[in-house]
Image 1 (tube, one colour):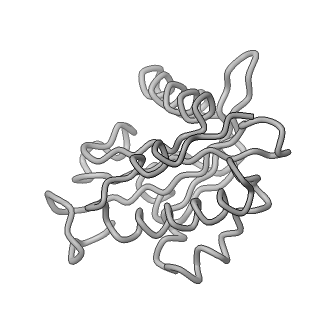
Image 2 (cartoon, helix red, strand yellow):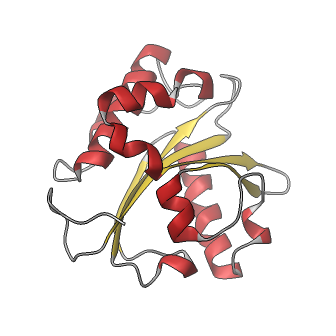
Length: 173
């Protein structure tokens, strides 16, 4: 399994990222440090994240990444994400509920995270169709392993903002 370098991990999230995303990244980095690389799903207990920042929990999502053929299944969707995405319930594949362009974008993100083992940060306009009019998003997608042998899951935290720009006092959706 791929183990990212400290330099890659240090550069994954900018220092001015919002507090929920920073706390999520701290949670994932702690799990990665204990694992000596990419953590397993079992090592990333949301209760541990709640101890750092309970406001992060509604913004979590977890995808299973299946290969041959490449398909993405939604395993967990936090309350804030469910409101914005309007995708239905966990257990569905993204190609069952999203348009082709969005599925392509999500597959590219999941593949990059799984192939490199490096979390991926994004701030800007949302790409999910139901979220495109929601202001701005700040998102981090981090690799996980279901077994410890291969990276086959992506744990993410997406924070949608009603305002322009990222500030500590912004209104969350």
